[in-house]
Image (cartoon, rainbow, N blue to C red; front, top):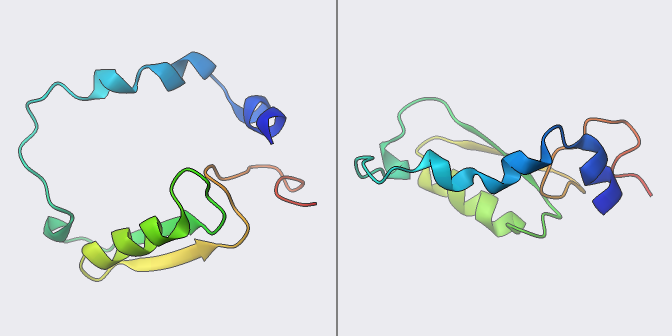
Length: 85
């Protein structure tokens, strides 16, 4: 699995810069304030955020639809052979 993730990564260093996205000045935000059509896609075998996290997210966003991605982990695979035994 690790090899598949590495093969798909375009810029591994980009995974270390997430801290730069938050400057601390964002106004308070609630998922319940989202008022646009929302589709939550979530892998059923995600080891980082288990499927109940996707269910909770869809529940908190008014009118959201949840689409389980059967057998998918934390990242969507872009190759037909990914996720097969």
